[in-house]
Image (tube, rainbow, N blue to C red; front, side, top):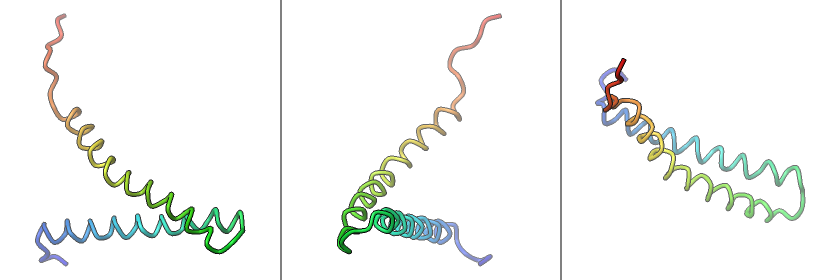
Length: 82
């Protein structure tokens, strides 16, 4: 583990993030099905919604976070006058 290159660590971290997102998508699509009941194919309706939400969040959240950190890390352009 100590001799992993930074690229390998980033790749492992990305695989872990995707695995967690897929696992949470599966669990969160099963929960309303288990609570509501119904036909066993009803789980696909919830899985479809959760996959769409997960995909959109995988596209939007990194963009939002990079914009947030960019705005925080840049120094202010105006100098306050006292």
